[in-house]
Amino acid sequence: MAISGFGFACYRTHFPGLLRPAPPFIYCVRKVRRSSAAAVETLLEPESFIKDETSLLVNSYKGDEFKGPNWKKISTKELGITTQRIAKPTRVVLNALRKKGYEVYLVGGCVRDLILNRTPKDYDILTSAELREVVRTFAQCEIVGKRFPICHVHISHTIVEVSSFSTTSRKSNKSISNFFRRPPGCDEQDYRRWKNCLRRDFTINGLMLDPYAKLVYDYLGGMEDIRKAKVRTVIPADSSFREDCARILRGVRIAARLGFRFSKETAYSVKDLSCSIMNLDKGRLLMEMNYMLAYGSAEASLRMLWKVGLLEILLPIQAAYFVSQGFRRRDKRSNMLLSLFSSLDKLLAPDRPCHGSLWVAILAFHIALSDHPRDPLVVAAFTLAVYNGGDLLEAVKIARSISQSHDNSFPELIRTQKVDLDDVVISEVRDLATSVLTAVSWMTDESFVSQAMAKYPQAPYSNLVFISLGLYLRVCKIFDCLKRGSGKDFITKRRKNIDYEYLAMGNLQEVRQIFARVVFDTVYPLHLREQSQSE
Image 1: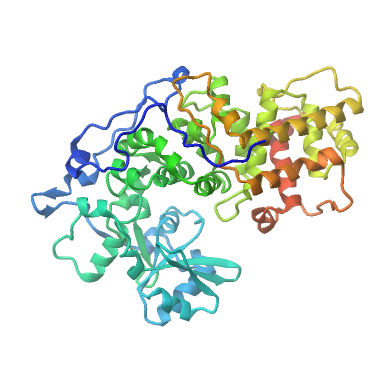
Image 2: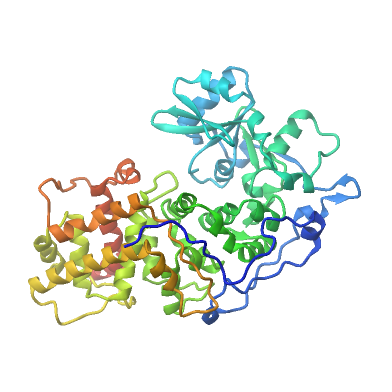
């Protein structure tokens, strides 16, 4: 096993001048070049992007006159946003700062989610107060971050992030000055809000909500893009992604979670610059992948990563599986890997995430099963043994009592005649456990990862490993019980309800039992169980 950092993996072609922005005029009028590197040879197909208007920036200026999107102020009542929909810890922070006379706004993705009647993953507050004034306002508050400092306010076991106009205005963003200038006739407050919104990544994240004036400020056309279900960068996509390649992954995550599509320009740039995510450090990549897979939209995220050519860079082993299944970029079908994550998504939400060890365990389990298909009885016994902490005899007994049909559409599940004896089943379960632990090691081995797509010369070369040693060890612990048997310290969970606080923390018992539930619900889906009961 090798736990290591990144090799500087990249496509076999290079991106000359990757960090050297072209003049604004070029970004506005040039045709966006499509990259062929992002498509695996066996899966090449025409991409029929939905046509949309050219970026608003193309027509931002006519001479010296600003021609950007019309600024809008929309009533929260019109949008159906009430104060009660804002999380209580966030309201506490807003009220405390407001009482001291400071301006306070909700900004970023939480505003977008409130407009869409979705539950925000978290809330970001922007205030006119200096950060030191925020610290003096709350008993438990500290300033974090050196380059772009913000405040973490601790309220009822929740961290609320607070940024200040004064610190956000110091952020260097050279691209903005290339494309925008102060519109004539705007007052100071509008100008300050507008300038802050320009620093956002996507227009739908560039909305600002004043909960006291009960207004949403839209300076970038974000409301129109929400209406059109579109993800579009604030500045031209090519420039935006060169400036911060993490925006590529954030864009994929947002589009997947909301069921939005990329604007044409943004989609082309995602594909052209996908290799640049290799510049991100290991921790950042793991964080972005966790946001995609642990918050209730994992299936859609995997589909989107595959569609735009990022899966073969981030998860080459899984991309190779997609190819082996004849899975096309825009395929609407499912497969076992996607079904596993669909089952996981049904148990999670943006405010009820799981620990990263759970989705890594699911990936490893599927690698082991796709590499060596198993009898459904063995998989059921394996799943039940994980659930009960390693009691193999009990797991086999319960597995044999299952009368429901398994999903026979998965090639990973095969009926055999070799599992008539309990000892044979137990041996197969232990062998599967060993295979799963081996798969975890493969996912942390650069040399193995780099070979995953070796059969497909048109695919990007990637030996990207972002699973940390700590996460690797946590995943191994999930399956250790199958090798050593049930421990004396194991206590069967009596309540069926999920303890989401424990799940997010990575509590071993909670993670094991949710893993087992996800696998069982995939192998024996509800519709087949209901069908068996009706018969």
